[in-house]
Length: 331
Image (cartoon, rainbow, N blue to C red; front, side):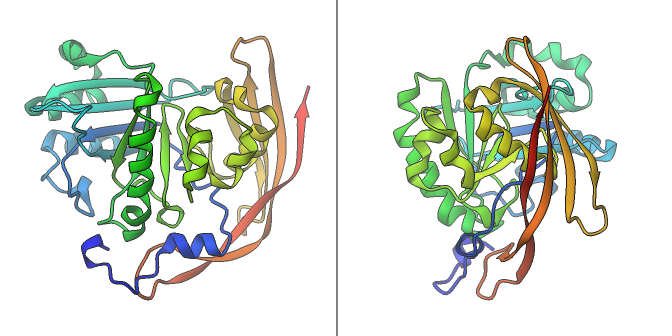
């Protein structure tokens, strides 16, 4: 729904979700790659299926990845008067470096508008051509990029609740981080019912149902991780059941967990009814001195009613809720 068509009696899916206690965990998108470009707003609903405003070369590159079966998330970010450069387009490309990893590997380019399609093809289809873009590469691996969904043409909740959170982050935190952190308005990446929602890169953590009072902890990482528990959608390096187990492990391990190399696997599961799963998360500490694993049982704990889209009469659906019934650290 376009935000311009939103009426006073619109029922926002995120308000229904939050009022009914829907847990956002497990809703992070499991990915191998991110392809992110600056694109002027307004963004159409199906932005990645239209040659305007997306150049043909970008669409060709993305189609190549989609047809190969690899998991990629394409996102648009709104140009920023401080960050952006006239006549140039910023491109972020993140990819999973290995099976065991702590964060996605980042590449950033700022190219003339006319070269955007060629760069997309080099990044996603013809890597042998990347040396042609060396002069446009940016050395920004030290910078965290926080992207807040404000894509109202996909769902009104994203702009209604996402923009105020973005505005607070951009105005209150960007200048205080010594240029190690940037904030962007971005297009849809799923989970309207958890708006306001955010993805933190290169970490690849997803957040939802965000409240202003929790932003300082999320950005500064200067308090107990347990306060973030109800807002965590999961880590994009793991699958659904693995994400549910990983949240419990993070609560035990604390902030250092974010630096650990990790990989997950589902050992066994109820494939028919999705009632339970046995999950193993292997990890190696940042210094490489300790390698271990956790094994968890994830089970259904009931269900709640939610809405996946906003509207005057949104369709309500029952969704299962899960919890970790056992968690054991292996030695």
